[in-house]
Amino acid sequence: YKKNSGSGGVMGMIQQIIADAKTEEAEAIQAEKDAQSAYESFVKDTNDSITAKQDSITDKSDTKAKKEGELTDSKKDLENIMIELEELANENADLHKACDFTLKNFDVRQQARDEEVEGLREAKAALSGAQLTFLQKK
Image (tube, rainbow, N blue to C red):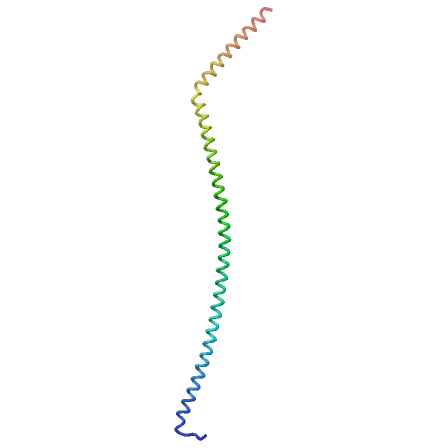
């Protein structure tokens, strides 16, 4: 080939286009590698996130089951306590009635007891005198 003075501009232009194409190809290959790397990183992060969320769901399900069991136990305990409170309230009412009866009849019972004590004193005095009489007759 003989260099032609007119062909230098076209040849330079073709060489520039070839160089630009190689540069564009290298940039496209690098961009594809970067995109592939970003995609792989995204997939890894997404899978890690899914695994973490599944573990969280499992943990929360276990916690929920435990709390539901505790709730059931607490409801049973509450029911038993309410029954016990009702029984104690009934016992309190019965004791209150007994106390009211005792307080209401205290004066009557005290007077009856005083009369009984007085009767015992009189009987004792009578028996003491009878014993003296019995001893004196001998």
